[in-house]
Image 1 (tube, helix red, strand yellow):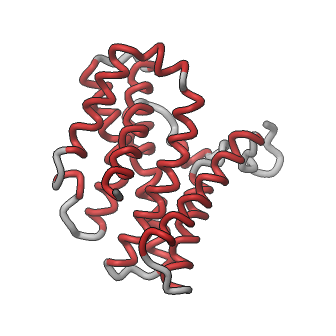
Image 2: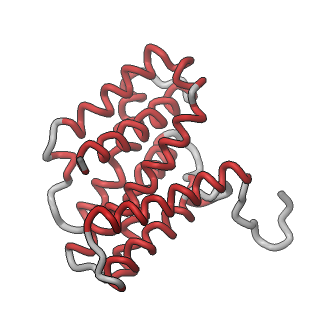
Length: 203
């Protein structure tokens, strides 16, 4: 079940990466690279930091899902773009899932709660950062005007608190942390919440 949820999150992230490729007028190879980086980049960075073989290289599904997402966007990107509001909701769910799972895995490998939470954020937003850099964009993490990284930070902190502070492990804790990040991300989109700029700068 957990792998199916992981693959679902990877699929949604891959769609956003491939759509970025379309907007940048990249060919199908470029679309596939952005899809793969967006979907798998955060998890690969996390596993390399933990000094374990990345899970993306242990299962064929983790490679095939971004390929499938790229093919879908290549042929039907106008239709995919039209359902972007639904994709953003699924993206928020993937954000919550990845930050919680990433934090829990880091805790299981012996990291302290603070470092584990940071690694959870990397899991959730690292792929998007790689996508933006490759596409020539300022990474969203550096100007979190739509509160994308902040929900991941709070979800990761919640996971670390439940795991290390209350001793709650497994899917109940993961679900609670994922829901926290998901709800905050959806609220930020619906209410148009923005992170503040430096004092004196206008919107």
